[in-house]
Image (cartoon, rainbow, N blue to C red):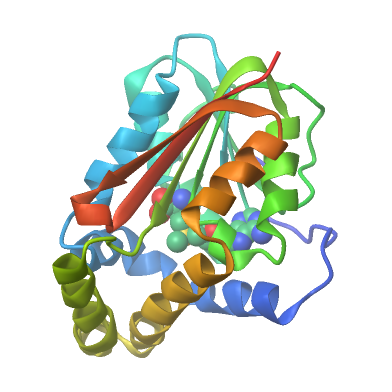
Length: 248
Ligand SMILES: C[S@@+](CC[C@H](N)C(=O)[O-])C[C@H]1O[C@@H](n2cnc3c(N)ncnc32)[C@H](O)[C@@H]1O
């Protein structure tokens, strides 16, 4: 596995990027359990749905962007004898992923520190690509989606997972209450770092879709050369799995 070490920052350190780097510094230790619990144990199911969309096959080379502690990478490897490269800009999150995959051969899983906005990979060098909870943290989601699509071969699958705001009024009301009151309180119970996440998530998700409604996101995917874009809303819209195929 790639050793930790300074990676040249491809993107200028914008406030959004610095906030993301800082936010994930203190989360890795309990990330897997708490991220599941705070989503009412929905997000493991969403991650599985994301991997369904890619349907990994033996021998494929798959890139997992914003791999974090490596949960999606692990699910990809569980499904098929494929090879996974996980990339993330946060060294503490990657350290947790390294511990998860300790003992695995580098030919099976390789972890790289780097940024989604400027991937250190050749064009069309992956058979498929996944990314999870990434676009809220980048300055220019359309440009980032284009950069992700660049490294996927024609015909390759791309799938993403992001939180969503439920479209129907009763569910949206419950979501608003949960993100405004429930999440911050639960976060405070866990730790100061998770208290910050609890208060950050609701406004971050809402703000993201105000700036980039789902229909516009679909446009970014199409503009990046991804066809047959599919949007699957799960858990009343609390999770959104998107998928598409790289044009050939
Ligand atoms: C909420 S975590 C998701 C981790 C994991 N994919 C999962 O399924 O739980 C978001 C991850 O995105 C990473 N991230 C945010 N912006 C990034 C960027 N521009 N390039 C690479 N990684 C980024 C963070 O460091 C963090 O590990």
